[in-house]
Image 1 (cartoon, helix red, strand yellow):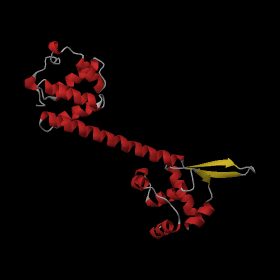
Image 2 (cartoon, rainbow, N blue to C red):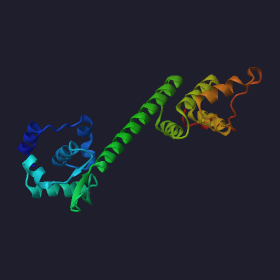
Image 3 (tube, rainbow, N blue to C red):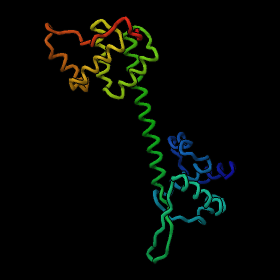
Image 4 (cartoon, rainbow, N blue to C red):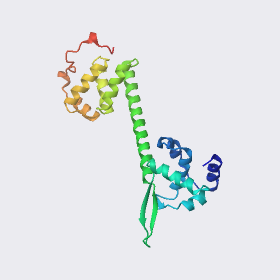
Length: 220
């Protein structure tokens, strides 16, 4: 399908192309020609009778080109061709678009997860840097990333505040706090607040440091 044919198709047919699909179509490992053809198929519904002759007339393409496009998109697992018998017992083929939507949904889901993780990391990093009054180094960042996969962000922030309250600006010290809380079954920021509020203020002791060697802390 040449560029002039694409332009003509878009001008003459009521083909709706959602911005989201246009933004993400390259992640489906398809070219622009296949993408436009997919949008044409999408507008026909989730499942419909496969009629190469009708498609050829509507798109101004040869039946051979239609079959090539269908074959390519089928190989890329973006659509399926199902065979069935109609009411007259005659075998017909239907185009099933469900694979296309599953692929798009997967891409969207991955992007949402990445955006959430990015936002989470930024919030935690900025909070710790603000509390410490300095920029984090690469090893400290790796520690924080590891925490994010095991602890609720609220718990991490509370651990940072606890460390600063004890006058310690050390990632390894925060790691010890998180380890101690994890053993106590503290999983959320509400758990942390409940735990701290129920401690006897008069007998409150610093977090156990496990023979921590302050002079060998490479993170300072």
